[in-house]
Image 1: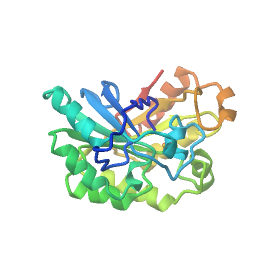
Image 2 (image 1 turned 30 degrees about the vertical axis):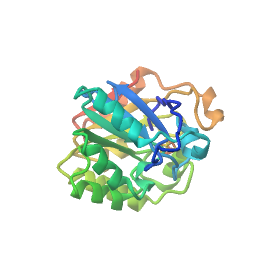
Image 3 (image 1 turned 120 degrees about the vertical axis):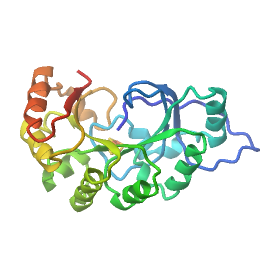
Image 4 (image 1 turned 30 degrees about the horizontal axis):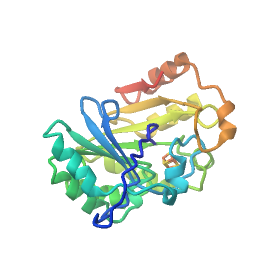
Length: 252
Ligand code: SF4
């Protein structure tokens, strides 16, 4: 999901109460939410195994990472005295974590806006968070065209496409700000897939085509694949605008 991963090596003292399984904390990002100075926390585990994943340890072996005590994050935010606008919750797949609403409620106590990064596989949690007013922005990955074999190949597992479609509908009808995003990985996503996705999210507020970065990914067999050229991404974005006016390219 997010390509930058900062696991600060906080030591866990006996008196620390580790409330949440936070496996990484990035104290500053300007690039993950337009116009916001945000922190990012990373939750462990994922139900997908996308070959192009940049968070493979977090997704597949989170127990090997130290837990960042929530109290340290609270202290950090307090010391910044209002300079931080928002908290981004990434992973892994954060919606797998049943206590996510409680975690967000604690984050909101720090007067922060909240952005959720998700693969869209848990529409029930997504709907719950939105109905409780706990998320201000959602970025949902759409891995490939909504055709079973394509999606399974891009996600590295067999995916419940009904759940993915439900999450799309929830966001389209939510009234909150959101974006759908697709990493344009050659061999997994082609131009026809982008058009298929754009049709499936027709009328969406925002669709972002992300450039593929072959460095440090889950399946090293993809590392030899050359990313599409910027022209290919721009052409695909231009075609997608027939269905989603606000379609942009990221990472070229
Ligand atoms: S959804 Fe895919 S890219 Fe995101 S954390 Fe899981 S395996 Fe990685």
